[in-house]
Image 1: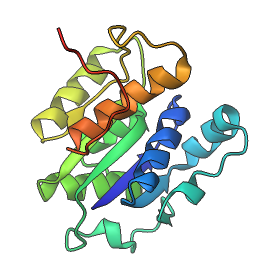
Image 2: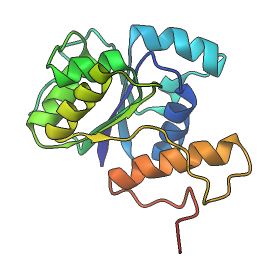
Image 3: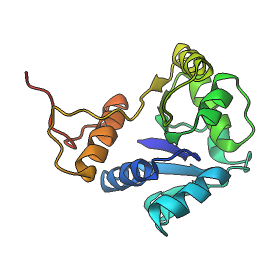
Image 4: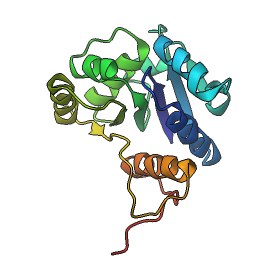
Length: 182
């Protein structure tokens, strides 16, 4: 399996880190793109953690010659986590100003799975309309909304719940959270 993982300048870098850790453990090939804005957030939120060490391949956000910029390069899907509203808007409107948006556009046009994890609250009407647009184009919109039925004991368990939901959306087996049993 091959997945593209995009990281944007929204808060929530810990979600990208944990997702990459799990994908690496599962030996899933990853193609990482970190936007310029995300670099600032990563320094603030992850204090020196190098996400590229968790990925199989890392691509510059301005490298439009990267393999993942073409539909002829087969991947199983893409996750953008965290996903800024700027990126949601760019994907919704096909404004491929960087490799991350181009890769999402390619995945959508090739009918490959795209999971966007938007990190913003509250949301404006523009945010909501852009999310409807990407959903209509075939993306999964998965805001990192916490659930309390698994009775999380700490932040790590809350993060695992969201990462587990991302993996579920990609049909990747996981046991990161306690599933509802009624």
